[in-house]
Length: 530
Image (cartoon, rainbow, N blue to C red; front, side):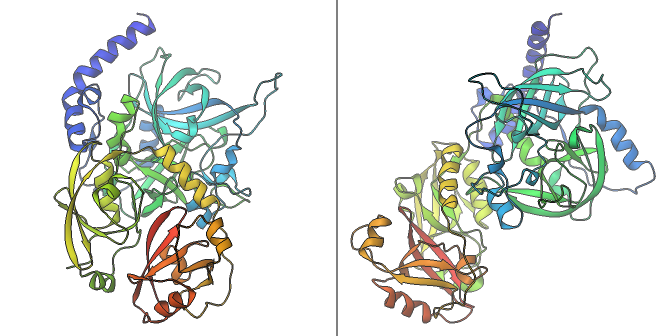
């Protein structure tokens, strides 16, 4: 049977077998049209508790069973105008800030487990140089579906897949079915099928993983192919993502190096609980025992949309504080408890703005469900179908108010570009003694020249932030140089003197609520005086 006929036959079989499961998943997520979800054949997931002892053959068995389902991926990418190294950071804050974007000229490619080697091929006239890349993937469906990292296949003109145990030069063509920048995941499919039947992995429940749990990584580090490493889950919920958004990651000390990207992280039952995605490193070495994997549950939830070829997420046009609401902050807002998500920025003419939500509002209820914190609000919003109108309850000035918000569709690329431009122009703070406000920032009076340069609205008073000390109350609260403070504790301020006076009136340990003007938007910031 020809490859085309085989693909059609298996496609039909997948559609029938996956229709019922696909409908359930799509209904639960409320993200994709039912017509897209009906063709999904979702891999099963084992959520049974992990019990039992380890023995001398445990890891040997995991490697033996799973290696045939792990593949090596080779790509060819035409170099674009921007150097690929701009997508990495140098560690510490840079790693968190530049993991998926940034413009630091000193960045290093080892920040991700990316195996892309920057070897320029012979260049024909008027041709862009070709970059050869290498990564890892794992088969989730015997019909040829493979999961890997988005950054492994990003911009690839050709994708070739090599199988475990195959001849050195044997490889098979593949195509991209769907990809997602936020989870750094991609679904590819073989367009050339090998004669031998494919193996597939089993999926585990990543929500069960706890620090100290044993895990194994399998991948293609430095083109060595099918290398295994063993370690433990070091931490949970490490925030990574594109500018302005975060994806919680599993941290592991199992060795992950360039080329491991897209490979599986397996529990002691040999089930995939994560996709190896990034490493924390310096410029002198690769693996130093700090690696990061995207939780498998997050990727599995996206599979219906990855197979449909488009990721659809909801958005309401706000930014929220990453910090949990403290008891003191809750008391100041008149909240009954510390649950809720503090709105720091409302995008002009966005869904939230049109509904009347303002910076400084605390969202306590979304579509009839209580909001525990900022993460839960973000999860609720992105998992709501665009076009849906939902009630949102907020606290403002010690009063509860409910508005209806119509969910819009998130354009992640556009949002990422805006955030990257914003962070790319942020000045690096320098060390100095905290000024008299005791928040660790330097303020200056707004001059007509500054007002023109910052394009401030007419009659905007207050003070401009010219410097922010590292690890200060202002820095931790989210204040940046060039922010213009226009309100302090709900009081409008017209000059530097008023700003300083209001900030000095805040007692140590108490929160200060500051409204700033930043690049055309009002941003609500909470910072606690030390």
